[in-house]
Image 1 (cartoon, rainbow, N blue to C red):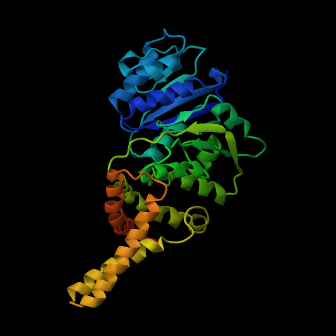
Image 2: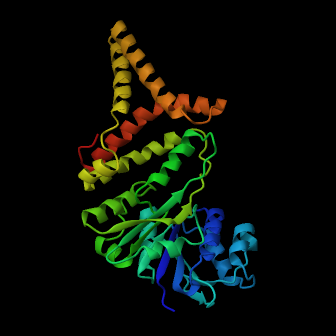
Length: 358
């Protein structure tokens, strides 16, 4: 039977998460001969390659989804059809969807990995999800059903489970559930990806590359629909203390996205610059400059303004989140560091991509 849809899963040194994702993809309520799964390995990771190779080597268990979900990597058994790229070997089983391993070479990053994956695909429709996601059994069926008339792309629903008192990081990840279009759960026609050149590989981090695709499709007036029953669950992974500090580096890619789509950026991403960050940084610089010039009272006034603005920012982040002592300490420290770091990376992105961006 002809392949109707190719599922592309970029991965980077996360075989345990990938195994769970593959389990969910192998358990789709869809004709197994009509879809394929392509693992685009951005790290050329031996463990990732071995996981896919074990899907080739072991053809014994009648329920590969259960085995993949519960067994350790070195004990995976799967009666599934698998084609492994580099070297090109294949074991075909008509009762299972094929799984292909593709090693990413040249440019790297999630955008490059997805390009590598969809360009190797055989299906006319490409479904995208991530290795830390769990598509529900009816995901493929619901997503493909939305391709009617001239529709070229479909966005599905993303569910992010949260505890009653999440951390600030967990709540930020949960905003993914409100995204208009995210590669954790979307579908696009292959010929459309070819026409627009796929993902912009200048987005080397997992940030804004899917927004760029979305805004590009909107600029070309490509019909996009939402499929609320095409559901993917995105569990929140452990972020570590101070994870929000590391994430500020991604702000430089906002400048690239703004340069490419200035009007749509303000309409769909961020209607105005983060003036509260600029206010905090301005007060801090004012305090330091005044104290350096021995303008004591002005310096104290600026320092007070910085403390009040930073305190309000911290309080906003703590509203509705965990009040564990470690989280409280993290919010106090990171609330002081985030504004200057965010502004630094935004302005660095503006310089790098040669765009006026605040």
